[in-house]
Image 1 (tube, helix red, strand yellow):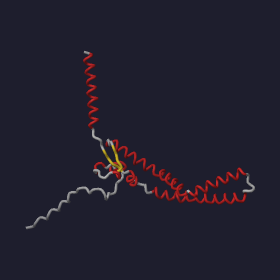
Image 2 (tube, helix red, strand yellow):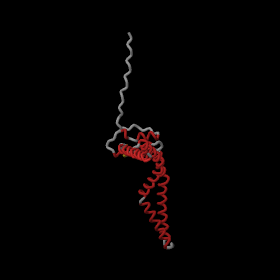
Image 3 (tube, rainbow, N blue to C red):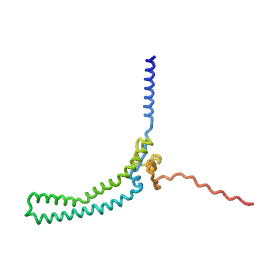
Image 4 (tube, rainbow, N blue to C red):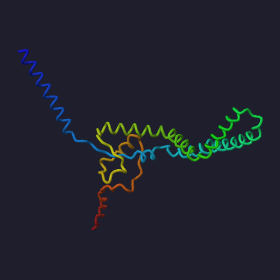
Length: 198
């Protein structure tokens, strides 16, 4: 009797496992699409980042450029005036500092772009993290298998658009997208004709 019971339990286990695997294999993939930059641009308070970036450039980068330029000029005049009295090792050290400052100023545009990008990433991080958290929550809740970037698709049904779902989770009211297909609306009912008086 025990052997029959063990065999029955084993068979039941195989049947359940086989059914689960078959269900997993027949579950269709769920597709969606999303536009991170668009949703990020709709975040409340995101417009402050532009003014903070301008302030950073005006108050940090521009003074740094001015300082580097003045230091280069000061080092150059000091080096020329004191080169005869200066020990060789100190002269080489000052000359190396001068070369580094000159190189930095020569490549200032590239340097300033890197600094500005790093600052922008720092300022955008809180907004980006909120959007990504909401996005991940929507994917998990909707059990999406694949999510594509909106701009990479030629055509996709509006039902696969994750933007409204993420916006709802974030509490963002989206503006009407002029490229979105118009929703079908029923014509407004005509007002009833006034009753005739006899």
